[in-house]
Length: 282
Image (cartoon, rainbow, N blue to C red; front, side, top):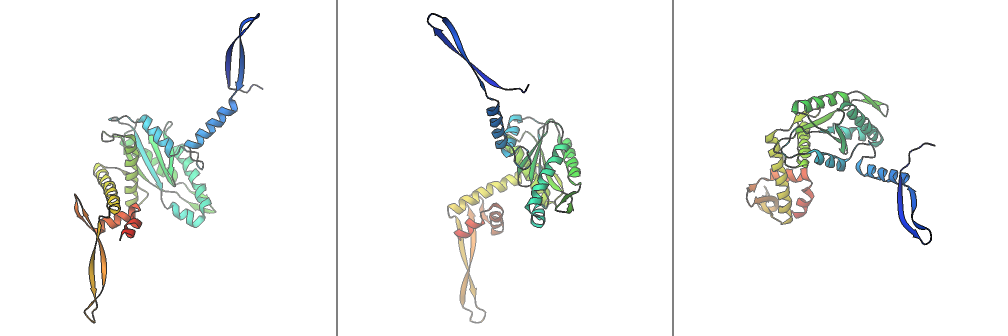
């Protein structure tokens, strides 16, 4: 019927007495097998809901294009604002309907050749080549405008908005994953600034975020090594003036940093998911 097919052709040498040398040829049609293998590869590297490349494909894509000391490679990290409200008020089906819509708007807004990936949940990453900071911010502004168009979900009209972190490769980026991590940090700064913002990561914020990550790792080690000490403050009865109870106070004496305030490490434990381990230790 004229349909292209892919085959593997094998030739085996054959010698037949009285006849002479020749060969036996076999032709195997592998079209369906290759199509199935391509489908499996696509499923392993793409998000089934939006059809976008997933986090694994994103990491490979950035690594292939990252040159230490190079420039012109930019990442935009997007997080939809109030996506949980959509799920809670309209149901998860509405959320699953919104995400492909957002994916389509992103693909139609970026330049040809730019990668749009779903990082997870309601987070997306756009990777651009041959662009400077001004160009990356301009793209982020176009994305904000595109996302703001109304969409009807469950009979309700909503206008999606996103917080966007922008990072352009500098000499400080020694590995590809640092670029994605930095635009993730910039996105959280945009969220902290009031959502629906575009934030470019600055060097001081980058250093602060990395210091925070280091402190989280050290807190995890301190909890595992039982280096969080407890001090007990007596509670007295105003009537009898006798000690009737004690209040236990967690204290962290860091080996190098000295005393770290509970206001710092307790909040850090809550943000990083270590609060349960800290509570068990106490």
